[in-house]
Every structure is written in C-alpha cells, then in structure tokens.
Length: 232
Image (cartoon, rainbow, N blue to C red; front, side, top):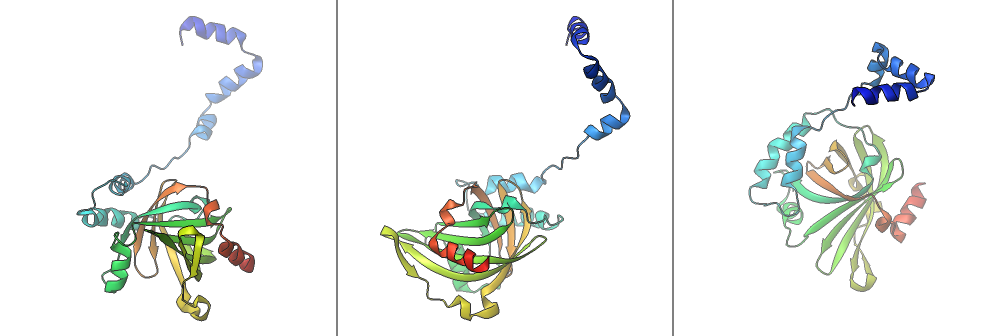
C-alpha cells in the first residue's frame, strides 16, 4: 500500500477499527494469531506418486517398503471422520507368513483388478464394506465396527455376497455368525489425511488406500441397512 493510500485508510477508519489495529500489534495478540500447522511427512508425497493409477508396478514393493516404515515410526493418528468415504486399495503388502492362496488372492490383479473399501458412518465409523471388483461382477464383504480404540477399528465380519450382472445376488457360503472370534479382526490406522490412508490389519498385511469420494450412498445396500439396525 502506498503512503497516500495509508493516510486515506487511516482517516476513513472508525475509532473501533483503529483500536483493533492497535491491539493487533500487541505481543499477546500476535501470539494468539500464531497457529501450529503440522506439515505432512516426506514419505506421504512419495506414496501418493507411487500409488497413482498409472504408476509403474515393477519394483514398487521395494520402493514402498522404506516409506511405509517411516510412517510406522510416527505417532499413530486417532480415528476420526476423515476415514468415512470410498477408498481405493492402491497397494497391499502381504507378510511372508501368508499362505500361497492368500498371497495370490490379494496380489494377483488379473483376478481382482480393483478393490474398494467403503467406510460408512456419520461422525464415527459404523461399518466397512470391502468390494472386490472383477470382470462380470463383484464380491462384497461386510463388517460392523464393534469398537474404536484410539487408532484401532475393531471389526466383526457378518456376511458376504456376490453381485453379478443384472443385479443377481448369490450369498457367499461362509457362516460368519458361527465362527465366533474367528470372524473378528481389527485395522490400525498408521496414517490418514484427506487423500491417503495407510492401515495395518490383524493378519499383518499393510494397505495403502486412496480416497475416491466422501459419498458412501453406494454402500447402503439392504444387507448393510439390516446389519446397522441389528447393531443400533
């Protein structure tokens, strides 16, 4: 602002404006205006780049491993409403102890080219629907959130079904309700922001997810509504 403009602004200002301007220069006012804004960890931007849809997959596991290790060393974030939404599974690190069938089912993108995780809720997560999209249909696996412990979501898997062309539904033949504790698991939130989430499951797998939408209306199937009513 030029000096002449400053004088005009001064003469046109009301006494209250002048008092506020003077107060802004006081030390306590300056302290009040300072906000601590934490910057994202360096590993975050690298993960965003490596998990982009068109990023090369050759050698990606080796590149992601040290980045995920950096995030594991950070203080765990609490679960909050940022987790609610539609997430695309961009990468899964499977532990060496996993069975060959488990590794093939998770890693082989020829069979399951896309996996979505839809977290349903309002202020807190209530349920999770995993959608495994494959040519000709999808497999939906649903779990209700039984407890939230700081950064951990405690889950109980309740049902699953295939959704094929024309809206044809086939129940997945697993009696979840008869499995007891075997139908339960948990997810630990390692890192989360408005675009990226890293979680670790109770079986040792680490998942890198990218947020696609905040709209979870797609997940409100009759099966989900029934489960939410049972657990309300």
